[in-house]
Length: 70
Image 1 (spheres, rainbow, N blue to C red):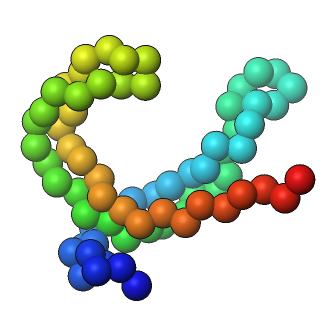
Image 2: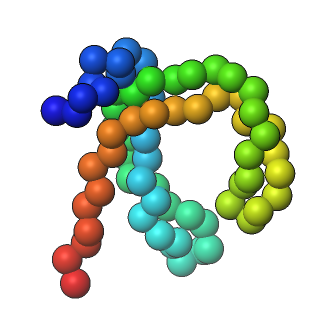
């Protein structure tokens, strides 16, 4: 249990990226609901390509990370 768990009063659905199918489409796992905290505020941030974008919400969550067995 995290120190911040009592503040996680919102819920989101998360789908993990699995990979690409034979047709080149992205595949995702089935949706899992997670507790989180959503703060709505406007701020300038960078996207995954380094471009400046405006964000209207920030989600704080405790994610479990699973490493696939090789």
